[in-house]
Structure formats: structure tokens, C-alpha cells
Image 1 (cartoon, each protein chain N blue to C red):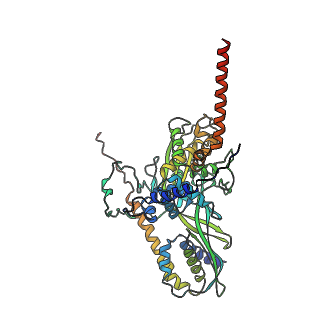
Image 2: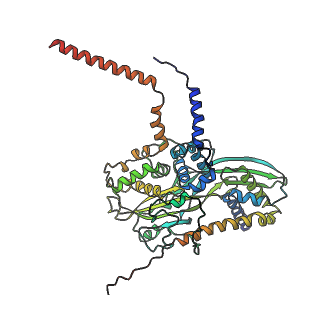
Image 3: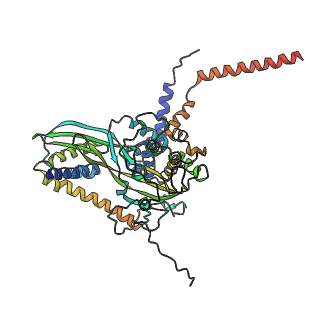
Length: 151
Length: 363
């Protein structure tokens, strides 16, 4: 059971990374994977909307904020391994790549895919987030008290 | 009498062809690309996403280009596109406490954990035109400092610990959705927040300003304003677990409002809430003020008859696409309607003249 949970957590990790990844960054790395497995569509790529919810007061009852575009698909490799994708945006190519990577990550190719695609993608995205956080940190106000000269 | 009239096809086609030419403008000037709009007019893109109620920066950029920069027309295009999308579901409520903040300020607590982070703000600029921007030139990189790695806590949490602010009890009740069912009154707070989040920025701003000027004044402080990115998660039934499906930029405003207490509530601070797609703090602050004004009933306050307290008035008029549709339809041909009006005025006038002639003859 603990193993199952660990596997689910790992899969959530890469599926989330692929969903959030900028298309150009993902496709550039995916192009480095030469051996592409054959697959059958279980669900061809389809673009739709997901209603994004917020909470009143940030912590209270949920409300509907607005939708975002999402593209999803599902496919099966020749050995029956199923890959799913739900990725942000309208790109069918990105959804297809994400579903293939999801399937390959459940096979013996996992380590190779992790090294070629997921690890560098995660590093690029972390670096981008870090750059923004560093810019924000530079705009943090350092208060100081003026000497008022009353004594 | 009903007269069917056809015609105008050629005029319409030619008008559209001219529109395309005018949209392109002077061809000796380089054409705008969608990525230029997305990157360099990002606050316009943000507004179109917020009021179009669809988070997709590339689509918003396309809509702005197609609409020649008319943002309400662009919002209309996004709303129309949105209706063609199958709905995959609803996300889990986003956790704004885990936001990666670009900006985070408080007007109530100077030394809040996480500090006052200004971000890329227009505040403190002198609002003087910068003619350097008229020339092209590289921008030097902005300074950086060691980044904060831990999440930034919400400021209202500190007041909550003392019980000095009205709490927002968490619930998982599925909210009603005004894109799925017609808006009916009374609306609950979830519907009001949805409606305000996609409402016209100018209208919501005007309503908020009216509360500051004394029409249902609610003494708001900006307890916290934050702008940044949050991940969006959704349960995927075929997987049996939730995954992140993307990341959106949001602006969140929490107001802290003075409150003397009422028949049903003790003296404490109360709250207004604004949450908007993209970077849009004018809209988020406005939304929070109007949200607070609309909560008068729930907090046992008096109805002062102010426009911002009237949810039917606010929610029925804040949608700029509905408003535009009804407003602009009166420019379309009403020849037959008008013909009957004309007949009526002629008849009334004839009768009035006859009455006068009759009276004069009698004298």
C-alpha cells in the first residue's frame, strides 16, 4: 500500500510538471528522445475548459472564478501501458507528448526519460521561478526609523 | 403591417473587408505578432482573460489583435469561444496561501511575516511620460536578492488568532455557476463573487468608489494585496487521484473593514474579498469593496438604499458583454418599429391640432 502511494505521488509529480510546462520547453526536450514507441489512442487529444475555483476570503466557501483551457488525451502502448495527459493550454502536440511520457515513465524506459526530459524540464522551470522570486525579493521594503532629534 | 426586407449583403462584405484593412493599418509599419501582444501588453491580456472568464494568454492576445485593441470587443470574442469548449470539470479551490508572490503588500501591518514586497508596480512612478520608450532599446536586468523559499502567510490569519476578525469557515459545498444556470436573486456570496470576478472593471471600480464616497461606506483597509502564481489541481476520475493541470497568475485582495457590531454580530473586523485572473489590482480591490458592501444582510447591517448594497442592481449591470449587447442592439435596423412610432406621433399630433382648432372655433 505504501508502495502504491509512493507510485501515485511520483506520477502526480511528473503529470503536474508536464501540465504546467511551457510547450516550447517540453517539446525541445522531448525531441531528444529518439525511440518513440507505437501507441493507440484511447482518447484522441481534445481541448476543453476547466472551471477554476477560489475560496471566499481565501479560506472559506468555494466559488467559481473562471475557466482555463486544458487539453487531454489517453493512449496505450503496444504492451498495454496506459498514458494519460491533462495539460494546460490548447496544444494537441503537448498533450500527446505528455501522455507518451506518462506511459513511458511506467515502463523500463523511465530512467532514460527522467534524465532526458523530466529532470532538465524541472530544473528549467525551477530556475524560472527562482529568477522571479529573486526579482520580488529585491523589491522588499526595508523599513528604518528616522532619528527624530527630540532628546 | 410586416414588410420583409432583404439586402445589404454586399455592403456588409465590403465593410468587413475594409475592417480587415483598417485593422492592419499602415502596411509600411511592421505587423503586431500575438507574442508581442502577450508579452508587452500583458495587462490588457490579463483584463481580457479576467472578464472573458477564460485563462489563456495566447487566445486573449489573438482577441485583442482581432478587436483592434477594443478590450470589450476582445472579451466578447473570448466569451463566445468559451461557450464552444466542452467542460472537463472544476478544479479544487486554489490555495492562494501557497502563492509564489511577485507582489505582496499590506496597508494594515508594516512588519507582517514575508514583508512588504512591491513587485513590478506602477505605484511611486511619477506618471510622467517616458519618452525613452519611444525609442527602441535594451532594458537592463532588474536587480535580484536572495529569494524567499517558504510560503507567505495570509495577513488576516494574525487577526484571526485573536478572534478580532470575522472567520471564513472552510466548506466544500459545490458553488452555483452562473455560466450554467441563469442568475437568480437572492444570489449567494459564491455567485456574487463569480459575477464580480468577471464583471466590468470600470463598473466595479465605480461601485467601489461610491462606497468610499459615502454610499454604504464600509471603512475598508487593504489588509493584504498579493499577486503571483498558484497551481491549479483537479481530481481526474479515470486516474482516481488529483493532479496539477496548470498554473495561473492571480491578484487577490483582502480588505479589513471596521465594524461596530450589529444585532447579530459582535464588534470585530469584517472582510471583503477580491480574486481576479492576472495582474489586476484595481479590479481586485474594487471587487473586495463591493463584495463587502453586498454582505450587509448577512452581517445584520442596515440597508441604506445605496446602489452598492443592491445585489440585483450590481450583478445585473456589471457584465459588460450583456450590457453591450443590449445597448448596441438599438443601432440595428428597427425600421418597422420606428414606422409604427412615427404613425403614432403623427396621429397624436393630428388629434392635438384638431382639439385646438375645435376649441378656437367654439370661442
